[in-house]
Image (cartoon, rainbow, N blue to C red; front, side, top):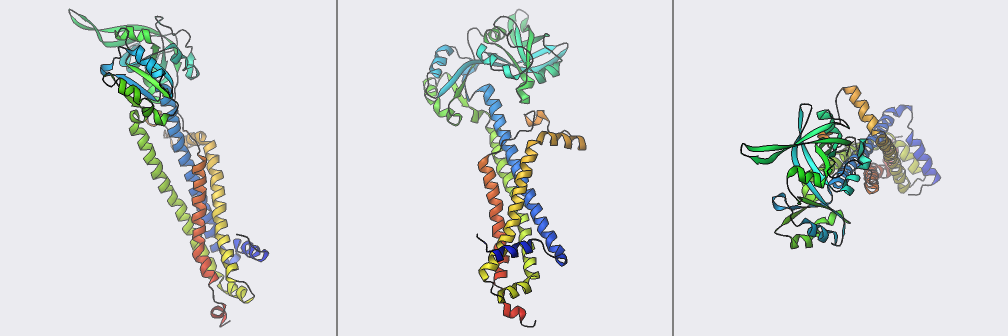
Length: 413
C-alpha cells in the first residue's frame, strides 16, 4: 500500500496522539505489547515442541535404529542369513545384531533393574561421543568390561573401575532348583545419551558376553535397522517381513514410540490454537483503539474531507495505522522469542531459583535439557497469522472513518 506524503504525515500524527488522548495512546501501546507477547509465546512454545520431538527422535532412533526385527520368543536362530538379507535390502543403510534383556544389577548392597544390551564392536564405538568418564576401548569380547548409563551409575554409586554384578534370574537348573546366574563386570565407561530412561537402565557389553550371561548360545533377539527415509521404514522392510513372516516381526520407530509422538503431535496443535488466542485478543485491542481514535478524530476527519481528502486516503491512513501497530508487535515478538530461545536454559534455571521448584525433571521430561528447534515455515506462518489478523482488525474502523459525512459532522459547527 503506497502512501502519499499527506497520508504519511497523517499516520505519523495519529501514531502519537496528543495529551488529551493519552487513554487512546495507552490502549494502542497495550495492543502492541499484547501482539508482541502473543507472537513471542507462539515462537517459543512451537520451537520448544519441535525441539522436543526432534531431540527425542534423534536420541531414541540414534540408539535403537529406525526399525527393529524381533524373533518370536525373543530368539533369532538363523540371524546371520537374515542380517545379510536385511543389509542387501534397497534403502537400508545399516543393520546390526542386538541382544537386549531386562536383568538386575547390584553394587555394594544397592540393586537396580537394568537392560543388558549386547552390541557389536562398531555399535559400541558409536557411543564414543556420549562417554563422560572412562573409555570404551577395553570393552571387548570375554574381557568382562561394560559401559553403564550415568543415571544408573549415580543410583548404585558405581564409578569407572568398580566391579558390578549382573544377575540373570533365569540361571542354571540344579537339584536344588534354578540358581540365578551372577557375573561380575568391571565398569570401563560411563555414558550419557540424554534420554533419562536410557541413562538410568542401559548396560552395554559385547554380544558374546551377553550371550554368555543369558545362556543363549549363538543366537540373538533383535536386528536393529537404519534406513534412508525413516518415514518409510516399514515399507522399506516389507520384503523382509514377507520372507520371514513366521520367524520374526518388524516394528518401526513410529509404532514403538507411537503413544509418545502422537501425544506430542496433538499437544503441538493444541498449544498453537490456544496461544493464537493471545494474538486474537491483541488484535481486538487494536480494533478497539482504532475505534476510539476514529470517534475522537471525527471532527478532524470531516475537516480533512472538506479540504479535499478522499475516502480512499482516509481508509489507507487508518489501515496503515492499525497495521503498523500489529507489524511492530510482530517484529518485537519475533525478536524477543528468538532471544528467549537463545537463553532458554538460563531462563529455566532462573525461574527454578526464584520458585524453588524443579521445572525440568529429566525423569519426567525424558530429556536432560530443554530443547529448541525453530522451523522457518512455522515462524513464517506465525508472522503471517499475526499480520493478517492485524490487517483484518483495521478494516471496520478504517471503513467507518472513510464513511464519515462532513456535512452531518460540521452542520452545527
